[in-house]
Structure formats: C-alpha cells, structure tokens
Amino acid sequence: MSETENRIEPETYRRVWPAVVAVILLLVALPVAVLFDLRDLTEQLSRRQANDISKIINDIRGFYANDVVARVLQAGDTKVTATDNYRVTPGAIPIPATFSLEIGKLTSSRDNTVRYDFLSDYPFAGREAHVLDPFQKNSLAAFRHDPSIQTLESVEGGWSPTVRVAAPIRMTQPCVTCHNAHPASPKHDWKVGDVRGIQAVSVTQPLTVGSLGFRYLFVYFAVAVATGIAFIVLQWRQARQLSLVNNELKDANNFLATVSLKIAKYLSPEIYKSVFSGERDVKVTAERKKLTIFFSDIVDFTATTERMQPEELTALLNDYLTEMSRIALAHGATVDKFIGDAILAFFGDPNTLGPREDARACMRMAVAMQDRLRELQVKWRDQGIEKPFQVRMGINTGYCNVGNFGSEDRMDYTIIGAEANLAARLQAIAPAGGIVLSYETFAHVKDMVDARPMEQISIKGISRAIIPYKVDRTHTGLEATATVISENEDGLSLKLDVSGLDAAKAARLRGKLQAALAALDDKIKEQIIPASPERA
Image (cartoon, rainbow, N blue to C red; front, side):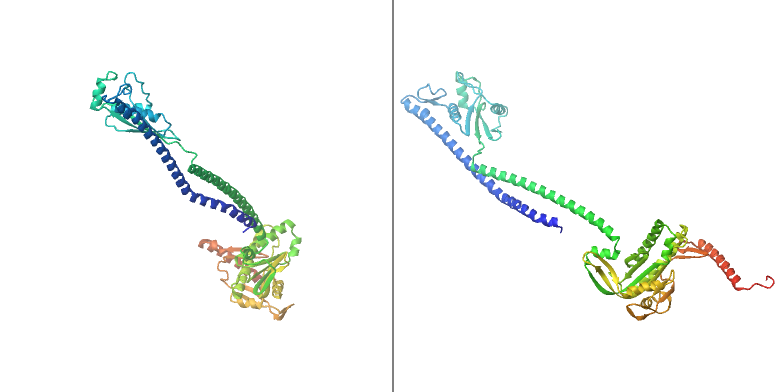
C-alpha cells in the first residue's frame, strides 16, 4: 500500500465514523419522534375537542334553561305552545327547527373547532336569508335530486383542514301541516319527505406548530437533513480524494510501467521477471551453483570494423545481437551481458532443469545460433558485406558464484569463477563457425554431437587437466524442426529450405544439385588424373 493510501485511510475512518453513528441514532430516533409527535398531537386534539364540546353543552344547557324551562315556568296557567316565533308569544317554546337554528347560532358565535349550521334556502318571511357557501348549495341540490342520499362529506383547507358533513332535513307530516298553513311560510305545497334544508357539522383541526411533539419532530428532521448534507459532503470529499489518489496511482503505474520496460532492455528476461515478481531480492548476495556457461565472440571483429562505416557496423552488430538474444531466450538461457561483440550467457539460474538438461539446452542453443548465422551471412552478402560475421563459441559446465555483485547503490547480476573463464578460453581456441566443449559438457551431450578431443590446455585457477572437444557435426534430429541447410564459402552460396517444397520442386532441385555434384566430380578428377602424353 502506498504512502498516500496509508495517510488517507485513517483520515477517512475518522470522518466516516461520526456520520455512521449519526445515521444510526437518527434511524433509532425516527420511530420515537413519530410516536412522540402522534401522542402529543392526539393529546392536543382531544383536549381541544373536549373543551369545545364542553362549551357547546354549556351553551345548549343555558339556552334550554333560559328559553325553554324559564318560559314554561313563566307561563303559569297559560297554555304552553311550540312555535317558531316563541320569543314574542307568551308561554311559547321553540319548535325543533327553531331550536336547531338557535344551536347553530350558539356554536357559530364562538371560535370553536366544532360548528353546527341549520340552513335552508326557504326562510320564513321577515327572517334574514341564510347565506349558503358552495358546499352547502351543492349538498342541498344533491339531496333534492337524489332522496336516497343520507350524508355528504367534504375536506377543505391545507395546513388546517376542515371536515364538513351535511345531512338533509326532511319534512314530516307535522312539519308539512305547519308550514303549509303558516302565513309566513315561503311555500305552501310541502309534501312529506321533501328536503326543507340541511344541517351541517364542521370540524377544524388547526396545525399546532407550537406543540412539543412538533418541535421535537422538526428538530429531528432538521438534524436528519444536516446529517444527510454532511454525509453527502463527506462522500464528495472522499470521492474527490480517492479520485486524486487513483490519478496519482495511475500516473505512478504508467511511470513504473515505462521505467520497467526501459529497465527490461538492460536485464535478461529471466532476471527481469524474477526481480519484478518479487522472487529475487535486490541486494548484494551470491550463491554457488553448477551452471553451463556459454561464451561467443566474432572472429576478426576488429579487422571487420576497419572495413565498415560506423553506422553500418552498428546496424550489423545490433542485428546480430538481436537474433542471438532471441534464440537464447527461446532456449531458456540467461543472457549475462554483451561484452562488445561477445555474448556471455548461462543455464542453471534462476531456473534450472538439472546440470544434464541445462547442458543439452545450451548445446541446442549454440547449434541454432550457428544455423541462424549461416542464414544471416547470406542476407549480409546480399547487402554488400564482403566478409560477414563468423562466430566462435565455447561451452563449459561447472560451479560458479552467481548473484548480485557490486555495491548497495549499484549492482550487477553476473557470474564469477574459473569455470566462466574456461568457457571464454574454449571460445578463443574454437575455429571460425565452430563450437568447443569442456569434457563435462561433452559428457552430457555426446549423444547429440560428434566431437574430437583437442590439445590439452591449462587455465589459471583450475588445477585439473583441460581437454577441449571440438564439435565436428551434430547428429540428425538434434533440431527436430531444422529444415534449412545453409552454407557459404568461396565458390559456394547455398541455402536450402525443404519445408516449403512440394514433390515436383524437390525433384527439380535434386536434379540441379546432382548436376552441381557432377561438376564438382569433374573438378576433382582434373586435379588427380595426370595429363596424357598426347596432350603433353
């Protein structure tokens, strides 16, 4: 984890935890807030309705005491009658309709949440006409249109809704008889069941913003909103920081990828993989291992450089080293270094198949390199290079110190030891285009090559006798996929790839090769058969 991530992570935790705790508290407090508010609202509504009903009952009791009972008692021996004009008639009491009108006046005179109205669009003569609002007019029209309707309801208002319930006042037989005979009646053809008017009850429940429950709920939602805003801001800041970190990491990764690709050009692929995968520590250390060391060098490289321009030489050398490195990588070699035109590579570290298989892999690599060189020599001659590169190769198997050598600031992954020097010495005594082996290497690959011992040599640091083995030829099948025959000498330029030939082409080329062999036979005969006396 990067230093930036390590720095941001504790800060993120410190900011997130308060928000998490606040959200949990708000979730727990929500049911409590709602319950508390509902209980408080219910209590407030019940108290208000109780007070209003108490006032209405007191008004009705006072009206009944003053305008009914008192008038009956004042009548004495006078006959008590029920009439609408009861106030001017001695001993009279109000009829039900008048009684309802008086109750409506009583409830309307107070600022109550409950109101009762007794209304009609047919008032008696001399009485003030009732002013009906739209709900009352519509209710009265609906009742008269459909006698089966018993009640109508309506809800009006927003913050302080009013629930209104209207019921029809229907004419009974006594009402019909009275109204049709009364001189002040506006209508004298009433029938039983006709709708005389309506009675309407209105209940208003104003919003009590000053209640404790409402204040608690308001505070709760205010805190919830503030917490939500804080959480959003926190998330935005965190997302912004993460975006910045991601951008930094992306830039760092791109930079590291670019650097690693550049570094890869200076390291063997095997070492590059082991270092960047974490398998190998980058520190000064070495260990002793049995390796197969390969050393190659270009014959007469100095003389070749004198005949070529620097640009041409650079391109030719890079072409050669690129091709040889590709073959080395394909066979699993660790390319130690390029020493000018020389190549030092080895098998056995960081990966090994055992000393025998490492030696055989190195042998196959050397043969593949020489085969590829013969192909390159044809190409280079076609490009105008009079004397293309020829390479000597030496291979030795033995114990070396392998690892990181140098200082803590700069080090080099390489091998040291007398066995590495021996591989260089074997290369030095090899012929141009040839391969020379140490005895141990030869012992591992003797079924793959035909080799003959050379003159014994000695090398500093190795006390045993060194008998080199020069490879004369490789056995058929050493390279199962080798289908190219290439040879370049004075008077001969041959490159034959049999993999791309069909039977007809193969027969035609065979004829050409036989003709060439016949010409060579004639040339040999000219050299070994003496001239006849006649010709002399």
